[in-house]
Image (cartoon, rainbow, N blue to C red):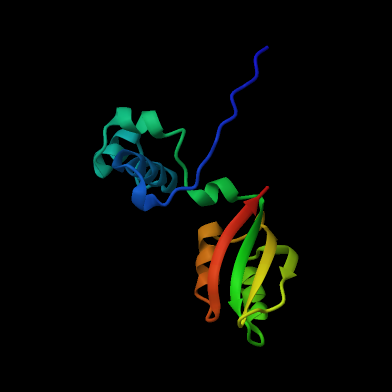
Length: 149
């Protein structure tokens, strides 16, 4: 038997996606949320053809779908001030993320690098909600997903 071709995935900002692929993602969301009952209804609403939807539907999905029920590692750059790591950990806990590991470097130039591994199985919301919550914390300079398993 021949080897199966491994699928490669790329994380891409939605701003650079071709319109047909972005609209396919929107159609899938409408169907999932029950805002459209049929593919015909959803594609008409969004303004793409059924053939375009069927061409891309198996290759496009929201980022959070790829990361549910997985362990993710988040890298943060935090200002060096008392209590900021505690605020970050509380934000993860509020979304019911299960923190597995925390690694913090020594602060240099008034910022510290922190990486946190989080089990997302029981998490409320999605990964985008988590990243958004962490980015809104006063003193957070950068938040980035650096790994998943």
